Length: 416
Image 1 (tube, rainbow, N blue to C red):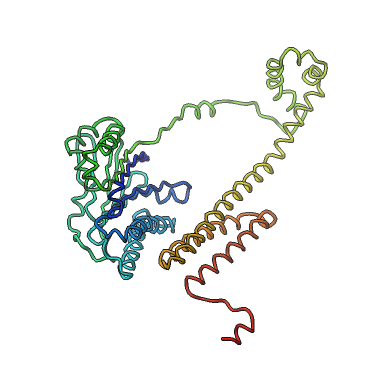
Image 2: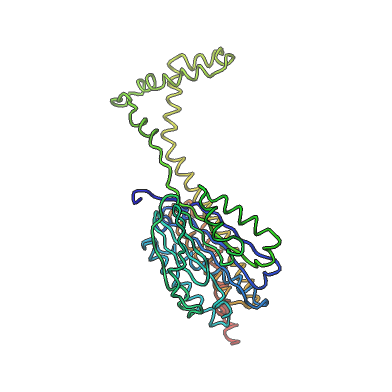
């Protein structure tokens, strides 16, 4: 299997009982590489649940689950020179540091009540980290392997700075299936039923069964929050048939740049096809008969095609600039939204959250700056003005979080 590169196809399920939402939260976070740089590190899949916390702290732990996923993702993709395993190790260290800091701020109810799985995948390689009682099953052929046994040595209530301490690694093969889910999965479906449904070619059967049974009233009474990720490994379809036909196609070489010869020889087939496709009313007109049947018409068609060839690099370049500008404007929009959310968090005296959201805004600005630097000076002139305005808003919010006041007038200094 080493010569084949696999893709992971996933289905996710998140169920939250509204009556139990104040004491438990769960989520699934799937991050698939969208560009060549991220593809060097692969995909990242996260499943988590926090339960048994005070109802008054529901917002804190809903926030913790989401920000933990954000911290892991950001660090995982922050350095594309690392291997996938190194990137995951660094991401888990960042997660441990954040959790330790969260405890220092007086939020320790999650200890012993959080289940979280990080799953990194690239080509055939998988790396899994886990804390809590999350279930992980690997299915290969008729074999069902409980991956959680790899983590049995972990403490039930670990040191927050060592929440994620072990990583299990392995290889996937064609048609392998993996289920990552919260421990209450076995309240919805038995192991025997899992074996039965997972034996089908796809994952639709087990996905549908879980969805349907979660909606049953009998299960709603005992399921507070449920999250599951179903992954299936498939190789990329490769079709080389058409490529071989193209390679075997032969064309007569053109010596020199004889414009008349090019028009007469290479345009002949195109002109004949145009004649066949044009309706009888147009073909009978004097103008089109002259255009298609006489040499001047051939020159006009050739000149038109030649103009396209000359202008096409410019058109493609301009389209590329427009695409980058659209991406930059989208990053600007997301940055403004992040700054606004940070301001709201600070109003509610949640300085830690305000700081984390502002860090996200800083990352977005860095991406926008990188794209701006790839544009010529004349093209980036207008978006650069918007960038400077956003940077001013960012600096003001940063100073607010750090309790820094900028004094610019001499009178204010004298008053102090």
